[in-house]
Length: 301
Length: 230
Image (cartoon, rainbow over all chains, first blue to last red; front, side, top):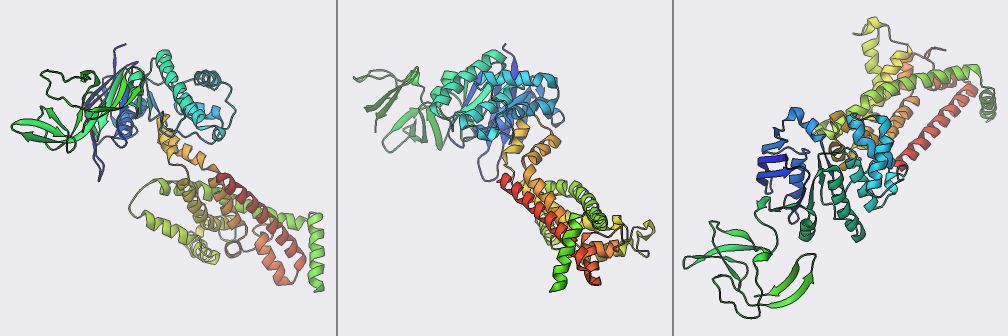
């Protein structure tokens, strides 16, 4: 199953008056789940729009199964993917007609099979028997699940979900997390979704892609801080605030982001004698248990 | 006052006995207006749609011209078309003047701006996410256009009905280009003008009642669709 399904090469999208998105290289393997995380406005949706061929890049290339995407066959490739938008829209008609709208565009399947196919995907999203309901009478959570079913019925190679967890309540978040895993297992679709929630990304995805200000970040977005590079006596530091300096080794200058992997943090009541250059004394303000990690808020300033 | 009351009485009689002359005139009106509305729809809806979705140089100018044409007087259209299809005109040899087709041509010019301008605003009123949603479902350009039009269908229908209402009630084009020939180009509005000129109120009032009824129905339908859109 380790087949490359999607790859980007020096992808770049520029907007007038705003920072652009720069993605030197990304690879997506068939059948895996990918989470794209980053703060608001980091370029997550822009990346999804480029990858799903809804938007054209300013420069760079996208390869689908090893073949470079060109305008002449972009439609064919686009038809092997589907996306559910952040605030999904259902057409003003019945749930059933919504579900089959993508099938109608393709006409690659036998129309007599559509009712059966619709029933299957509706069952998967937990909305069996909803065919005749009018789409605009559904709740937010139901609307989203119908939108997912509408994408799913196309059996896409890649399913994109843009911020699927925003705008829905807790109960639906749990349902949706389970659904994403079920889809991935049952259809072996590659799933690429964006989220703000770091822990959710790690819980659900095989791979996490972090974006900040239009750039890919190596490592994760845990403990991400913004600061300025300074040099004192030949040693480099990033100043996070008036009192906090982190020792670093970098070629970067000016404003930067620093991230500290949680597995590299040691907590101790006593001062530790070690070669580690970054050691801070602080007071634990808050302890929060997450699935596999512990979130601590420590005041070191 | 008596002659008005007599006219009303006679008119009711004509309506309830389904007077042949009256029906003939009403049929001409309906047929001609229906044909011109259909053609104006085929031209106006795509035109309004394209203007709405495309960005091009001079777009605002086109919209301004379109909105100005909404107020185009029927007699000006009559004059314009007349100059083209009269014997001395460039299309004179086609012998269109004083035929129903002459009225159709004039009415298309009358209905087109109405249907195009309202289709334009109908398209602009469709949720912007419809286009993107269609693309995510694998729609090509034409299919995407159909998704957008389908979402705006009530407003588009309202545009078509407004166009029909406009041509059904006009008199200038029909009179100047149709010539009010009995059983051929005489429609409700030209007949009313003609009968009134003769001092015959009965048929005029009967036809006026039909005209008002149709206008009333059209407006009810129009408002119903406008509400559905909202």
